[in-house]
Amino acid sequence: MKQSRRIRILLTVPHLNRTQSPYKEMMAIARHLNREDFDLTICALRNGGHEETGPVLDRLGIPWFVSIFRARKTSLAECKVVYQGQKEIGRRGPFDIQHSLDFTSSPVEAIAARIRGRRYVYNQRNMNENGHPFFLRMKFRFSNRIVAIANHVHKFLLKERAPASKLVNIFNGIDLEQADLEFSRTASAPGNMILVLGQIEPRKRHEDIIKALPLILKRHPEMHLAIAGHVYHQAYLADLRLLVDELGLQDKVNFLGGRDDVPELMRQSKALVLCSESEGLPWVILEAMAARLPFVGSDISANREVVENERTGLLSPLGDPAGYAESIDRLMSNPGLAARLTSEARAMVERTFSAVVMVRQTEKMYREMMLIRRPDPVGAGLVAHRAK
Image 1 (cartoon, rainbow, N blue to C red):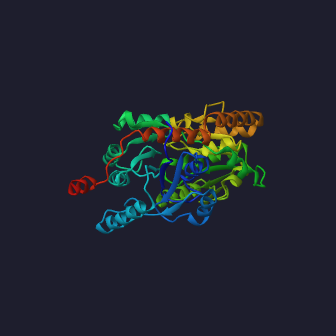
Image 2 (cartoon, rainbow, N blue to C red; image 1 turned 90 degrees about the vertical axis):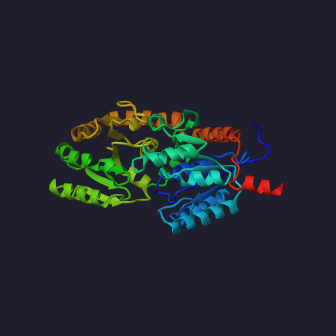
Image 3 (tube, one colour; image 1 turned 120 degrees about the vertical axis):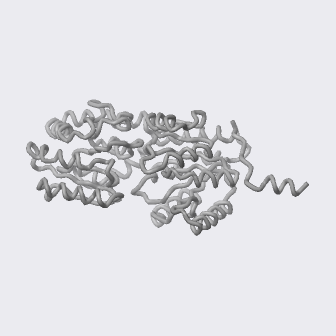
C-alpha cells in the first residue's frame, strides 16, 4: 500500500557497541531501509559505543539519541528516570512504529509505547534464558507484532502462548558487502588457531572444546585455542580457567576478552567452534560462513537452521568433546573437505541469510502494521471529553 507520507520508525537498541549484538541488525536496517518510504530514528538505552557508532549513523543521515526507555532496576527513582526518558522520546517524535531490538523479557518498553500511542514490535532474539515467563507474556500482550528470528524461536514463542496472529518470521541476515569490506582490510594469514566467539556464560559450554583440546593435540600438537567474548558470568570464567590448569593447557588456551577485531581473528583461525546448548540464530556462524572459515558446532536446533551437517559445516552431539575433536581432526587432515564446506557455506549465506532480504521483509511488516489502528495515547480520551 502506498503511504501518503513516510512511515516514522523508532528503532530502540540497548547500546551502540559494534562488538556486541544487536549492532549488526541495527546497522543493516540503517543502511538498507528504503528512505523514500521510511524515516528512521535510533534510540539507545545507554551510551556504550556511541563515540564510534554515532559518527557512522551521522554519515548515513540517521538521527540517533540516548534515552532510558525501560527500567534497569525496580525502584521509584528508576520509574522517574524512565518517565523522563519517555518524555525525551516523545519530544523527538512523533513515531508511527516503535521497533525494539532489545533483548529483555521486561514489558516496560512495550507498555510505554502503547501508552504513548505508538504501534510496537520487538525481535525475540533468544529463548528467554535470563527472563521471566510472566513478564514475557505481558510483553506479548502489549506488542502488535513479535519477530521470530528463527523457526525454533517461533516454536518457542507458540509454546509460551504468544498469539500466532502477532508472530512474523524474519531471519537474521548478514550484510555481505560490509563483511567482505571488513575482511579485505585484514592482513593476517590462517595460523594454527581454533577460535571460539561469544559471551562467556554457562550455556555456551566452553568447557567442551577445552576438554576436546588434549585429544586434538595428540594429532595436531601445533594447534591452540583462543576464546574471545565479553564476560557475563565471572564464576564460570573462573571454572574454565581452573579446568585449563587441571588439564595442563595453560600454554594452549588464551582468554582474549571482548574484541573488536573479529575479522582479524577469523583470518588467523583454522576453524570456528560453537558448543552452545541454546542460541537464537547465531551471528558468529553467519560471519564465519561469509569469511569462508570452517565451522564446528553442537547439534542443536539453532545451529541446524544455519548449518547442514557435512555440507556447510560439521555438527556433533551436544556435550561431546570427543565429537568436536574428531571434527577438528577431519578439517585439519583434509584441506579438501574444509574447502568444500566453506564454499557451500558461503553460497548458502548469499542465498538465504542476506541483510537486504531481512530489511525488505521488515519493511513489509512495517507497512502491514500501519493497517493496525493506532492506539490512542493515555489521557487522549479524557482531553477529548473535556473539550466537549
